[in-house]
Amino acid sequence: DLYSEMTVRKDGLEQIVVLRADAQGIIASKVTTTITLPAELPWLEIAVRLDEKKPDYWPESGSIYLPFKAAKPQFRVGRLGSVVDPVTGYARASNRTYGYVNTGAMIADADGIGLGICPLDHGLMSLGDKGIGTIDPDYVPETPVARVGLYNNLWTINFPYWVSGTITSRVRIWPVHSLEPASLVEPALEARN
Image (tube, rainbow, N blue to C red; front, side):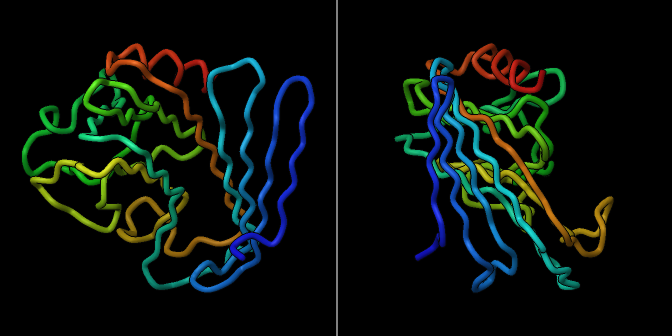
């Protein structure tokens, strides 16, 4: 089994599911995943906590992996000052595989129905099937996946050479019915305030 323990709590305001897993395989720390579903609000929150992460001097990164179901997926990224379409909004040869998001991202199907994602603690994010370890000047995401960075030391620029201890990261997710910027910006700002 992947998880060693699961608890479910419910009161009048929310339901909380807590999954715990012991260190095993390539995951060298205990992992606790908490999913919070408010009773009367249209979002859920996922928190991932790594406990007692051991330092590793080899390049490494860890992410919250969020696959979505969306036929012919479309993406929007909340950057500083605007919401951009990665197909048309990035200059060629710029960093297209990962970057810091200001208000999060949206992944939707061809009709604009999908989900908004707002990292609450760590804003480094990648969309599609390439992650932080890849640089591709022509990359355009096609797979409906988001990765929210927990830690990395791949580039050793502005990051410690090794990461250890306890790391927690939360992500808010909500439904969207269009790819209009307000579908991303307003819920993301509410989540952060």
